[in-house]
Structure formats: structure tokens, C-alpha cells
Image (cartoon, rainbow, N blue to C red; front, top):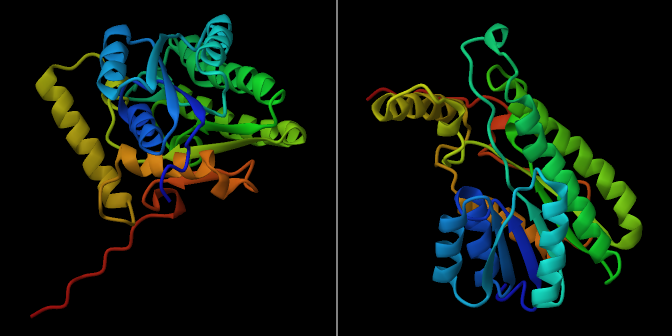
Length: 270
């Protein structure tokens, strides 16, 4: 389909980089006008300027509900509507050698961004959409919120909360024809993995990421690497009319990782 989102207005939080930037570009290519909300002022402003007049930047910290409400209000004032809300902004918790070593010092910040930010974004977008005949809200979780595992425990807990909240909000907001769905990406190269460690040199960080991604690759049934565009395609589907009967779902975009470990068949001997 071409111009699948023509005439629609969307907000993408955390839209200045990574998966969020991929969603912004996809929505613009499909005819939407998009507000990029992010805490990275310079990066967000530069990105919006590159994208043209259908993109705008707003400096927003989603952990502050008042800022999220102001974001929705300013979007409606500038563009006249809000049809799609993508609650993508998220941060990782710190990775520890063992959960026994975790001081939980980053718990409040991670939960404020990853859970409170999603809840405020859903609520404030739905308040607007309920007055205009409905809309689509897309919350970004992670396979880390679906599939149990060690490491970054606060992050995993926050993303699991997004899944349960999304399903619950979908039930309550269906009355207003507001659809609420969730995307759970996995093994997508973005800066969030590197942000989970802070005590490494650039060379050590590169080796760390290579090791983790090699492990992800070994576990993933599909061998090709996932990309932000893969997640953006899922977001496009959930934003548009093709999914008008879809709500309360969790769409995994993970190359099959959460379904189970890859089976590697030996190559026949010559």
C-alpha cells in the first residue's frame, strides 16, 4: 500500500534515534505528519530538520507526566489532530554480574521512563482520541519482557509491565474505538544494549556488544539480522486501517527468538 497514513498525525516518543527514528521515517514515507519527542534536543532538532516540514521536534522527558500531556496538547494545536501515538521511549537498567550485586539504584528512573511514560502517553493520547472517534496507540516492550532470563532485571520487569498494561488499556479503551497494541522487538541493533554498561572503554564496549550479539544470533531461529525498519513495518501495520480489528495484541519482532532456540542442522558431508 502507498500513503497508508496519509492525512494522519502521529507522535513517536524516543523518536530521535534507534527504533524510534525508524518508525518516524516509515510513517513520514507513508504520508503522516510526525512529532518526534525526545530528551536529545540537538539530535532531535537535526533529525526533524532533515526530514522536512511534515516532521517537528518537541523536547520531552516522558518520565514527567505533565510534559507528556503538554506534548499531546501542542501536537493537536500544531497539526489539528492526533491519530497515532507510539510510546517508544525507553532506557536500560544497569547490567550487573549477578542480581545479588544489583543495588537497584536505577529502579525509579527506569520504571519512570519505561512504565510511567508509557502509561501517561497512553492516557493522554486516549483522552484526545476519545473525542475524535478513536485512534491507534502502540507501546514498545521487548522480548525481555516476555522471555525470562538473567541480567538487567529492572529493565525486564519494566517491559513485562508494558505488556500487561497494554492488554488492560486495550480492554478499557475499546469503548472509545481506541486500539492499544504492543510490539516486542528482539535482537535489533540499537544503542540501548551499550547503555546497560558504563564502566568499559570504547574497545571493551565494542567487544562486549559483539559477544552479546553473537549469542543472540546463535539463539535466533532466523539468521538474518533484525533492523529498526522491521519494527517500523510492524508499527505501520498497527497504526493503519489494516489492523482496525486488532487490539490488545503483543507482536513479537524478534526473528523467532521468543518462540524457542534455533535448531542448527549439520551440513551433509561431501
